[in-house]
Amino acid sequence: MINNLEYYKVFYYVAKHKSLTVAAGELAISQPAVSQSVKQLENILGAKLFTRASKGVKLTKEGELLYDYVAKGYEQIELGERKLQQMLNLDLGEVHIGASDMTLQFYLLPYLEKFHERYPGIKVKVTNAPTPETLQNLQEGKIDFGVVSTPFEAKEELQAIVVREIEDIFVAGRRFIPYKNKMLDLQELEDMPLICLEGGTSTRSYMDSFLQKNEVEIKPEFELATSDMIVQFALRNLGVGCVMRDFAKEYLESGRLFELRFNQIIPRRHFCVVTDAKNPVSVAARNLLELVYEA
Image (cartoon, rainbow, N blue to C red; front, side, top):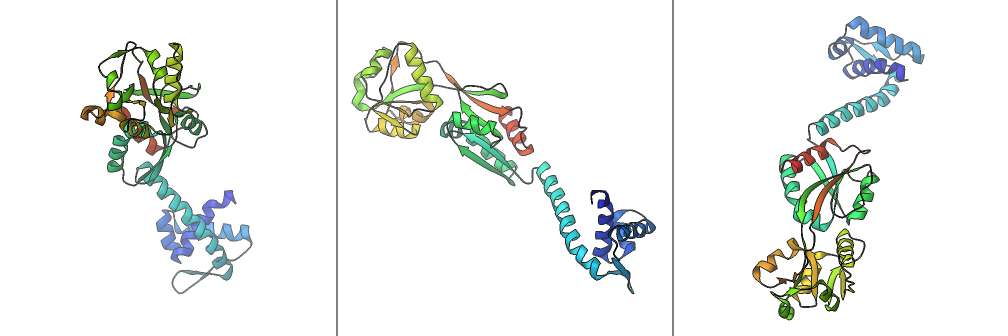
């Protein structure tokens, strides 16, 4: 069959136009070459496919049966080629991204907005998950790239590019006013009702590791799934919240929350774009990455 694909192509055009001459024009070959291809296919299949008509040719019963199948296959190939070209031209396609609430809200969202304006035909699918799960999805080829926060365990095949610095802070409301503008020792956190992210996130792991290195052991009063909820709990004076600064920025500026100061600086972290060398990204994803890296 594979060796006969050119014959089937000629057969398709002759059957479609019911004319050897028109088929020859469509294929940019001579009419004798078209006739020869049809005869070769008839010999291979052992069946007469066309008979002469008053104007051109018409399909035999055997030819009609074969055309029903060949037309579907050939038209699907043509459609596939058109779709591929549209994908290469960024008229259609999909980008699969892995990102946490934090990286999506405070880094990726503006780029997705620009990308959608520039390439409205491209669908963007975001898998919302913590850093460890995002890295796993990347290695399994479920996403084109991930936007994650440090720290994370980088496998050898993963390529990470730092794109933005982030800062973790402790915030509180009016119930904790005595702590405002006071230089605190990290040890004092052990006696505070803390509100933290639940385990399994890079943010929580990072803070736990930092505090342990400074011989501080915390037992949070609340462990929540999202940083947004930590801020809401802090606004209701349920405890001292540990969040990335961006989440509390609005409330810090309005004075509804304040930042606790410590005599030791909490090292800053980073957002990183991570790709997998063994899983090449799609054309659409590559253009989105270029948009991100341009900034």
